[in-house]
Image 1 (cartoon, rainbow, N blue to C red):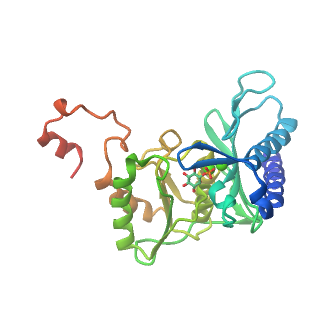
Image 2 (cartoon, rainbow, N blue to C red):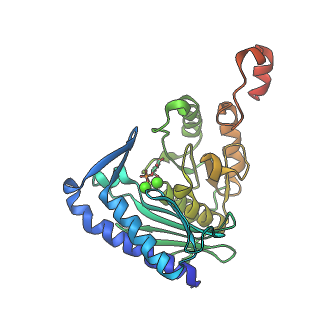
Length: 289
Ligand code: IPD
Ligand code: CA
Ligand code: CA
């Protein structure tokens, strides 16, 4: 295995073991609200420290972007290498004893995702990817499913529960996907959702408003497993917007067609025009309707 991936796996397993040790005594944990519907526990923070400790020992000059600790430079200041870490993806599940959460670690070099690890401490499933070298689940190569159309397709998603601005647009997409596919799942760990696209458990996944640490490792898993990842408009800006669509190559364009009519100016990442500058007839054009 690639040496950087080996270290990332070691860090993910160490954090996963720590999370698993706490899973039986969640009621004793100190839980702090971070924002609307957003919580952090001591476990998230400890797991992040554990991961950074292991990575830093091997790569002292690398930088870090952790969900809990934010940005951290390496020993020589700014570095081209940055580890992007979600120490516990699915905190709400973890705090409710709902066994769907994961550790997500990715390495970026000059803005490109080079390797990624998603580890599920409950099932002990380990997903890894290295740019150009494929993706694996427990050391076996994985590929996205062979799903070509909506008939029989299973999609994964996440609800935009933190930022309510996009709820109506999201529900429009949800309604259309529900009508056309075999089913939609919302387990609650975006990193695992992407890993499930990579290994063919889902045929596609979409979510609005994710963060780089939710996405980085899972995105590389999907790409290295032969899937397509884009933002809601089909571009590669998903790490910036946090809006993502990941699917098999045949399903991805169909998902884009379903999503397009529901895009609002805010979801298009365009500045919202003032009503005066946007007479009714031109707004209909701009909506693409
Ligand atoms: C959350 C999970 C969830 C997604 C949320 C994320 P967290 O991460 O990935 O599936 O819907 O948007 O914030 O907060 O548990 O690390
Ligand atoms: Ca997360
Ligand atoms: Ca988290």
